[in-house]
Length: 547
Image 1 (cartoon, rainbow, N blue to C red):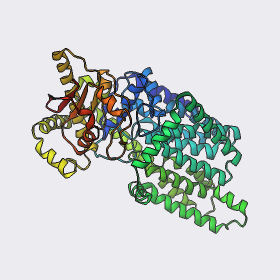
Image 2: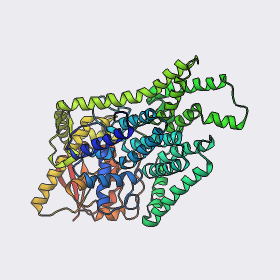
Image 3: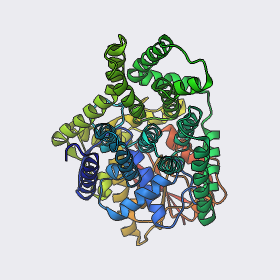
Image 4: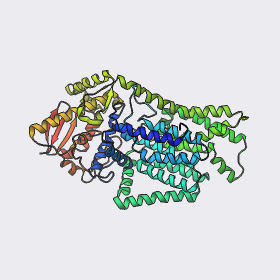
């Protein structure tokens, strides 16, 4: 059983179900509030709102819908785990089909494809740490989803031999990529295009797969209007995220030099080996070379690097492994080739850093958990099931009081256009402070409602995320984005946004601390404040009440 790929997949699925049922408490990591982007979208979906139609989102709708389905099934799941595993209902069956296909030729190679995938899919861990303390990454979920989908797509293109099987899996994976994050679909299109050019996939088969994707999107459009609305959001995001690609490629190369460096050397070595063995003299020969590991490695490296230029937090370059596996098998058998040890060492140098980092960061978080303590956030539900170092918990409480009693310095920083710390949102103690700030808001709202005998119909918070409607079970306003980031994902006000906000009883300004982003968001939606009464709700909160 230990050598059965399908047994490993089944065991992993059972472990996931157990993880979603158990009331697990996870060590807090950087940017953990990104989790609320999904929680906000999940609540809106359950109330009948449709992503991209009723609210702007920085990513595709599929991850939100699958997370909502898991939330209905496992309502007490720890949110980081629920979101991290949201696409497994699609990915695990695809992985099982690929494993079954490969097992017909080599059970060992099938297992070698399955185990790394399961490793990277296990924990909410990125392969680049933004903060030195151990913790799980409550951000970059959709980037990790896409990285895993591209892994499956490359494995399909490399290992699937039956035409119908390959067409079906390519269509499913490309549709999933498109509805998850458009940049993933762009990289996927490059890979499928390369498979067509190299002869790995017939042009007619690629067109058939594309037609199936377009047909599915057309059905979705006729049923909901979602496809066209999503395309509009994509164009909006393109307008908000302009800039040249070269600096982004350099950033990827610097952040992931542990993979890029040996990859370039390996690519040069494989190119030299191809030249040494004699370059092709015919078009068919060149296509065969393009379909060889050297061609696929170059194409895969470029496509995956292109995807990572748009990301912060991901499973960078794990999709190279399905390309490296046949390369490793090929060169292992070349007993008399003097380049054999060089290629084998370089192959491991490309593959091992990602696996080692994933295991090391995961185990640091798991092993630190017994020494961590929870925060006093009883009203945050599963979102509050996190833990931090005891000294971080004490610091978070102290900083909340400090922000409330010493606001002048932070207002000065707003005037200078800078944050209290360059990596403020990546600092775990700030994320802990933010959770305490949310708890303070909930406590104050309940007290105000009790004193005034009025239940507020909903909330809008001038911040990146807004968990209050989810936690207090109120109605979020329509036509308002999820994940309001003034530097990346705040489109111009849509028709109906201000009117929807005017129908919301409470607009809340968090002040611990006041920041440039919070002030920018307040200015962006300032028209909705007209005619409201400002109430000092709590030391860290002002409430603008609809009269």
